[in-house]
Amino acid sequence: MVRFINLTPHVITIVGGNEDSKIISIPPSGEIARVSIENQLVFNLEGIEIYRAQYGQVEGLPAPEENTVFIVSTLVRARVPERLDVASPGNLVRNDAGQPIGCRGLVIN
Image (cartoon, rainbow, N blue to C red; front, side, top):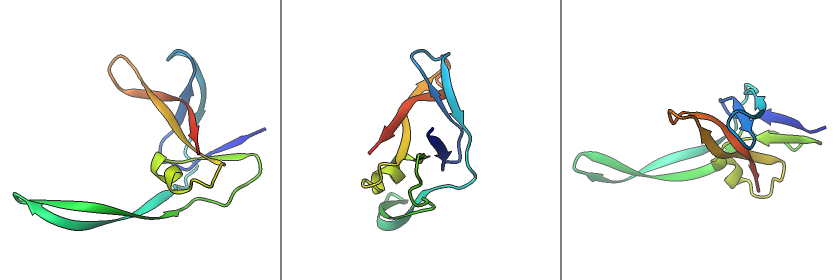
C-alpha cells in the first residue's frame, strides 16, 4: 500500500469526477518542503521596487522511502525532476463561490 506524506502547510483533498466525490484528504505532516528564494533588486519603477527571484535548493524534502509519495508544491516538484516519488496537487476544483475545495489527482515528474 502507498503512503502519502503531505509536505505542504495545507490539507490536500483529492476529488473524483464530480465535486462531491472526495477520494481522500491528506493532512499536513507538520514538515514543509520549500525552495529557497533570494530576491534581487532589479530596478525601481515609480517608487515600486522590482525584484528578480533566484531559486535555490530544495529544503525539507526527505530521502526517498519505499512505497511513499511526498506531496509538495509545484515549485518544489519542478526543482527535483529526478525524484519520481514527489507529486504536487493537480488542477484545482472550486465550488460555486470560486473557493478551492480540492484538486483532481496529483502531478508527478
